[in-house]
Amino acid sequence: MRSIRVGAALAVGGTLLLATACGSSSPKAGGTPAPVPPGGGKGGAASSPSPTASSAVLDLEPKDGTQDAAPTALKVGVANGKLTQVTVTDKSGAAVQGSISADGTDWVPATALSVSDTYQVKASATDDKGVATTASSSFTTLTPSKTSRSQDNVVTGSTYGVGMIVSVDFGMPIKNQKAAEAGITFEASDGQQVKGHWMGNQRLDLRPQTFWKPGTTVKVHFRLKNVEVSPGVYGNSDRDESFTIGRSQVSTVDAAKHTMTVQTDGQPDQTIPISSGSDEHPTYNGTMVIEAKEGTAHMTSASVPGLKPGEYDLQVPHSARLTDSGTYVHGNNWSSHDTFGSENVSHGCIGLEDDPGNQGGPDTPAAKFYNSSLVGDVVKVVNSKGAQVAPDNGLSGWNMDWSAW
Image: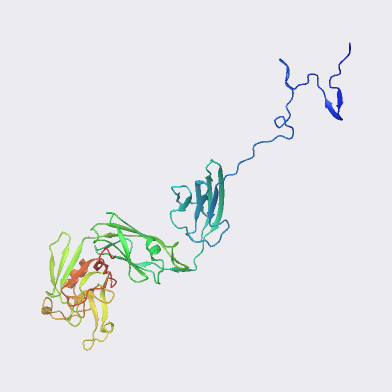
């Protein structure tokens, strides 16, 4: 019998062919499959699917490593995708609050960042196929070289009258007035809204639409350290203040009748004889507010240009200031008793009868009114020959319509 050599080499056309016993890689029933070459039978090394890169592109501002970034510079955006998470922390590890926009393309912080701080940003997003991408950065905010004060007339824990206006002096011209105003917010226990009005370019007065309600508690929040109030100039203070509104006391001075009617919550109206400004120096008309209780005040005619004759230099008792220009409700201890209720003899102030001496008397009309008064109490003047008081003269902003405030 002729033997068959399995696997013999046959040369065909110069090409070496390898024969197998079966001539096929298909297994017979019950047999062992022939090995399949790596790579799916096509030869070569093993291969795996290549990772797919996300088409979403994250944009973090400020860029990683940035120094002296503005507190308003932080923003996170994505092109060709949607944000899924953004985390921002300061150097202490505290999280910065913020929100992703409705369309998922932007994230912004709820407030400006702090100056002189370092922040870490981590963001992730996915493209329309759900493929994710991430990015991170670290940056430092600037340290202001110039700051502006924000001095106000509130003493925390004090009780004020219903006409109280919070007045903030920045000590320098403010260019970014909207930003500065937005950095001062109010919380009133009765929900009353407070709005500001700029008296020139460095003073901001804030009040509700109508007089405060008695018993209201008011909190004032200053958040100005991270606010650029003018180019290159930042606020210098973050602080909280609070005060309470006391009983309502509104006094109406009728210059023609030489009287002042005092209306106080829960008490009968009281009418006090007074002497207001003379025809030559009439008292301002309008609504004024007691902005300071000065006790015995030094008053001199040197502050009244061209006052000759009639010069004076006096220590005036029970003095409550109404305007920056020098209008007071005060004790008058140099005029006769008959003057009050019948004549207007002052240089623009409202005089109440008082006893001799720099301190006046303890039980005089002037003393009683002074002792019952609060800073923030309202004093209205009518029927005077004087001009209307300007809104920026003292706390006289109540003379401006709310629509213009």
